[in-house]
Each structure stands twice: as C-alpha cells, then as structure tokens.
Image (cartoon, rainbow, N blue to C red):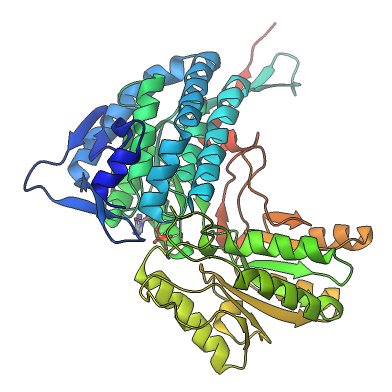
Length: 493
Ligand code: ADP
C-alpha cells in the first residue's frame, strides 16, 4: 500500500495528516523543508511526509502547553471526564481508519491493529472516569489545634516519548492519565510511526481538548527532544517507553532537575510450563505471548522454560502451530506475522538464531531465510537451549521462540529471575500451592498465570529492576501525574 492507496482506503481521509501538531496549530511540510518520509514497512512505499520539527518549535510548544495547562487544571474532574469520554467515543467510531493507518505505518496484521486501537481507547475511557476520583485525605491529627489534609495536584507540563511497536495505544496510554490528572503533554512519537499519533490528535481536537494542551512533535532529533525536555524548567515530568539504554540516558539527564519519571523499559520475560499444566492452554498462551505483534512487544515471552515431563509434547504441538502461521502483508487475510519494523530488527533475529545454533540449539520449525529477505523472517522454534546463549540474557524482540528444558521449580525460578529485567512473566500450572509460591517468587512487575495475555487498562502495567519505574493504567496510574501536597492547619482553638 502506498500513500494514495492509503488515503483512498480511509473513510475519513482527514485522519491522515502530513503535519506536526504544535502549540495548537497544524504545521504542514512546505516545499524544501526537511521532512520525515513515513514508510510502509511491508512494501517500503512512502505513505506520507511529516515535518521534522526542530527543537526551537518544541520550546514554543512547551510555553503554550504551560499556559493551556493552568486553565485545564482549574477545570473540574467532571469537565475533563466529559472531554476524555468524547475522545474515547471518537476513537471507537474511527477504529477501522485508525487500524488501517496503524497497519500501514507499522506492519502489524490488521486484526491486531484493530485490537490495539480498542485497547488504547480503553485508557481514555478509564482515565476519564478516574479524573473524578483524584481524592485526597483527611489525616487524623497529631496535635489538638491542628488539622491535616492531603491534596493531589497535577504535576504540570509532561513530556512523553514513545516507541514504534504500539503507535496508537502508546499515545492513549500516556495522554489519558496526564489529561485526566490536569496536565499538558508534549509528545514525541517514534520517527517510524507518527501517523497514528497525529490521527489521534485530530480526534482529540474534535473532542474538545483545548488548543495547545497537547502537542505532537515528530522529529528525527530524538536526542535534542530528550535534552530539551530534561533541561527545560517548565517540563515537570517525563513518561518514556522504550529501551533500557535510552531510559538510562534520560534518567541521567533528568537527574539535573530531579525530574519526575515514568519509565517503561525492556523486558526478558520468562514463560514457564510446569508438568501439571493444561497442555493446550499452555501452547495457546505461548503462541499469544510470543508471537503477538511479530514478537515485538516488551511483554513477549523471551525464554520458554518447559518441565521435562511435558517438554516433548509441548514442543511438538507448539512447533506445529508455529509452522502453520502465515507470514505476509498486514492487510492480507489470515496474516499472523508481518514484516519486522526494520532490517536491523531482522538482523538481530538472525544474530540470536545463529548464536543459538552455533551453541547447539535444535531447529523445531522455521529458521531458514524468508524468500523476501530484508525485514522478513520466519517464525521459529528452537529447543535444546542453554543459559550461555545470547537470547537467555537479551530481549530478541522478534518471532524467535527458544525452549529450555528444566527439572525442578527451584531451578526454574532461579533461571527466570537471573536477569536484570523485571517486566512481564508467565507460568502455567494447576497445583494451587505451586501457583501461589511461583507467583510470589517471580521478581517481575507482572505475572500471567495460565494466560499469555495480561495487558488491560484496568490493571497496573510496569516493571521492577531495570524494566522501569511507575505504572500505567489502573487506579494507581493517575498517581504518576499527580503531586501530593500535605497541608497542616494549625492554631485552631
Ligand atoms: P526502540 O528500540 O524500541 O526503538 P528506543 O529506546 O531506541 O527503542 O526508542 C524509543 C523512543 O525513544 C523513540 O521515540 C526514539 O526516537 C526515542 N529516543 C531514542 N534515543 C533517544 C534519546 N537519546 N533521547 C530521547 N529520546 C530518544
């Protein structure tokens, strides 16, 4: 699909904006301007050209955001909730168009894109409701003449930086709690995928989000954006989703002004199948957890540990299902595996695969090169994995499923926790005692028990260790965008 085919396919072509949305204005690309070519990863066609915004325009957007935020913070929770609800309704009314834009710029199968748009919309609905519940406390006092209370106030102007793997849901996930809390947002989408973010800005504007409160700043100068938001005294908080390496840089940069941070970083998820697991359910869970979004999510199973008694049966069924997966363009029916986002991502798959094969892994299915080469790889299952292979330590972020055999629960818990990461983990077991013990022993922010799908706006999403700080979604998600203020009233009779 190319740019004109994309425009024709949309019911509302107004959602495809070749512009940035800065300080309440749409900034189009002028002839001769530096621009970012947004490409369809499946065909390499150029879909659109968006401006490559320089840091100076970001500064203006930050100042405008500060002005708009003062007014927005003064609105009641209910007033903000009404706008967020309208935003949610508009996203759902335009779900198909938003899904088409998403598949076009990112490559994931259209069915997954529809699900992502709905999932993201859930955050707008949820936090719209939560906007009314930013409760404070009255604290029983420590002195007769004093009354103590705690109020919660918006942190102010927030910067947000997002990756390309969920171009739509990441926007909703960050905008929704920030707006609900009464904050303004300057948002940097990934360079590869700005179109979904811009389409959501169109809908935000239609929903009545005040002018200047939200800016969407496509730029190739990610470092410049990061430095500016960390240095600029107006920006009070940064919410970042991406790699641990970049998260660490931003944390260091933010240290200068003791910046409030939410970081959702890399993972290295273990997926454990115990002997007493429901085999069919475990296979299904592994397929969902490993291959969703072509293996390109931070909660994808990265290491699959299967106990000896069930190992061979699991590998056989799992590999059969993986061998049947259709690799193709996200717009073709039945596609399960689209292209990788880039040739670099596919190269990482090949490096991890080769490393495992050199160290003795067995190919159960896949592995051979895809005829289209470049960004295209085959979903692959390996067995006979050992802890010295790269994939046992690093996130592969690709449809490569390595299966490790284990004997005892103690052994597998030690292996599962032997990583600097701590985002998602999964296990399948039926023994209740085992379920409790393993859920408690896993050093992760999230544990899926007998399921491979855990993401929802109603639950706290986030990691421990080097997987990050803060939580997105749930009743806890608003806290990241609120400051707590304690007021001590003295001299009362
Ligand atoms: P990924 O491997 O998923 O692309 P990255 O952490 O490299 O993960 O990128 C996630 C987001 O962070 C993208 O929007 C990218 O442009 C941005 N980014 C990359 N480097 C920096 C940086 N030094 N400062 C600020 N943002 C950055």
